[in-house]
Image 1 (cartoon, rainbow, N blue to C red):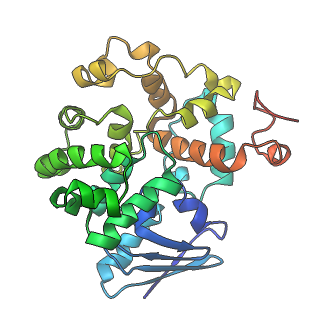
Image 2 (image 1 turned 30 degrees about the vertical axis):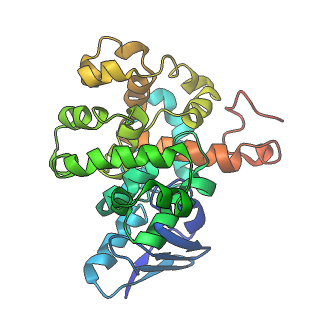
Length: 307
């Protein structure tokens, strides 16, 4: 058993809400159990400003800090944000200083699969269910490569995302050792984007949740919607990044970097980029509504406020 001190505001349900590791967890208010993958059986219990961790392996008690996002708390990485965006950032950091990027980089196959499956569907009602169907029936995601399509349809699901995952996963498993060992981002990007079905959102999510680089963030509709709400951040949103250019260039040498929303976003928020994207998702899904508008910490900055 291990005890760690945390901010008493830490909300386990909210922490794991935007995380691709959540399909591997049983989450119940102040208690979380990791059911599958690396350090399966790990139990996390929160009581006010203390978290108790239970596992027979002491390495898993240390690894729990990664799962809890303690490696990426915003106060550690917010200092390099451009001055123009400080007002928005400082309010968010003050409110969510306990909120890190919850992940499990040792479960790269499961995380990668969650990312692939999340295209054009509801993550919480569909992706979590599909991943759990595989793990409950076969114990590991890579088992998908060894079962027939009829069995997949019957026990996992019939959505096109599942069949796409099988094709993508087959290539990923062949390249996996190379991908995990590479530190050269340009070569890593070439490898991942070379897989049919892997686009820029997948690459950036992989960099954030598997490679644990907070410089990266998927430019998705939630982030774009969030940035457009505020005068200071709305001009970040210009053109979406293009896969053909991203395969060819590193960002700071790209011929279209100054009109690329991704480059502009990363330049604005630096190492806080992944955290801002995560908070934007949480905000869009749980905070931005007419009912909650009056209590929002950003209401006086918001161009879409309902009050």
